[in-house]
Amino acid sequence: MSPPDSRPARRKMPLRHKLMLALACEILLVGFQQADLRSRQTGILIEVPAVAHHRIA
Image 1 (cartoon, rainbow, N blue to C red):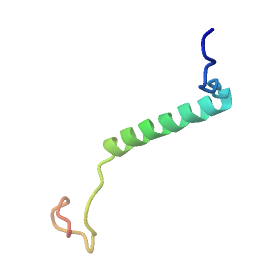
Image 2: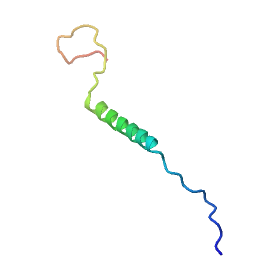
Image 3: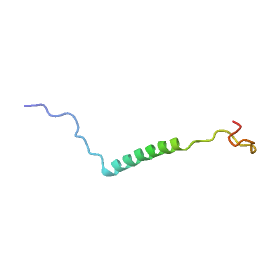
Image 4: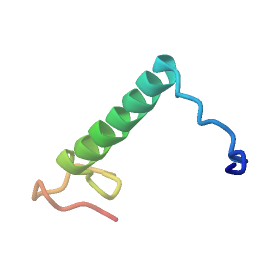
């Protein structure tokens, strides 16, 4: 006679939770892609400089 299994049975994750997890992962991935695509201009423009790419940082 074998000893009874002392581990509790694994419960399945509900479909709703799987969908929420997939959506959260997709939002993270799209956010990282958007952050990489958009370059941010550092510095504050006080007045219009003579050369367009000169900024005060």
